[in-house]
Image (cartoon, rainbow, N blue to C red; front, top):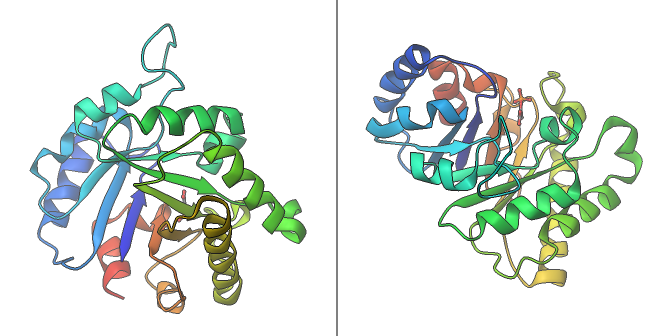
Length: 233
Ligand code: PEP
C-alpha cells in the first residue's frame, strides 16, 4: 500500500535527518512511502533507501516574480518525486482556487513527477459531498490530457487533524464513487488514498476497504516509530 506522510510546516534539518536515519532502518518492503516536506528540506532525502520525498505545494508558474513561492522546476531539481496539489490547508487557509489547482496540475504534468490531488468536503458540505468531490476533481482535471501518475487523496476536511475519522463504509462508498467518476469521464483508473486522522490504532479498520490504495497521514507521521507502527499495523 501507499503510505504518504505530510509533515506540513514541521521539522528542522536536524530533526529530519534524525527521523530519516531511523526510518531507513525500518523494513517497509512491499509498500510505497513518501514524505512531503517543506521545500528547504527536500534535499535531506539524498540518503533515502526505502522512501521518496515530495513537495507539499508548487507555484502556479514555472518562474517569475512570485515572492515566497517555490516552483515545480525547483522542487523537481531538488529531487522531489511527488507533489501534493490542492491540500485543504492550501485551499482553505491560503485561498487556493480550483483554477490555481488546475494550473498546478497542468504545470506538474510537464515533469516526471507523481501528482497527489487532494479533494474533500467541509463539514457543512457533508450532505452533498459527492457533488463537492465531483466538482473538485472535474475542475482540477480540466484541460489535462494525460492522466498518468495522478493519485487522488480523499480527505474530508472535518477529519484532518481533528482526531475524528470518516467511517470505513463511507470511505468505501466515496472510493467507489471516485472510481466510477474517473472511469465514466476520463476512462482512467487512479490510485485513491484516504486521509484524515489516520493513526496506528485505527488504520486496521481502513486497510481492508475495497479499492483503497493507501493513506495520506499528517500528525501520526511526525514520529518515525509511530509512523512505522501505522504501516505495520
Ligand atoms: C493531512 O494533513 O493531509 C492529514 C491527513 O492530517 P492528519 O492525519 O493529521 O489528519
